[in-house]
Image (cartoon, rainbow, N blue to C red; front, top):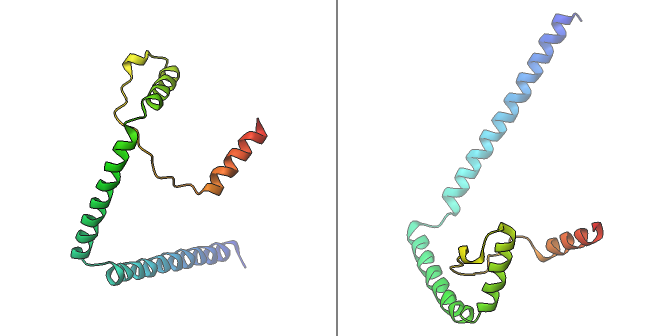
Length: 121
């Protein structure tokens, strides 16, 4: 085989491979669109779920407000830590509310990170 034939065959193989990958991705995209049409609830069900979810979250925040009213010591500690970190006076820091953010990392992941930090220090 000559160099031109080898180059020509490699270009064909490249085009075929790229075409095959793009075609497969297009088919997967169509399948995902079809699944979205089949399995997604109608808009009325979404609205009802959102209304119920909002009512539940409002009730949770109402109970958390009474629990957070006694957290003046926690607010003082957080504001002091922020002032030290930002190197600014405490009077310039205003904390509006404190709330727990949902943890996305599972407990075993957090434990692993803490273990690695403790072993490296």
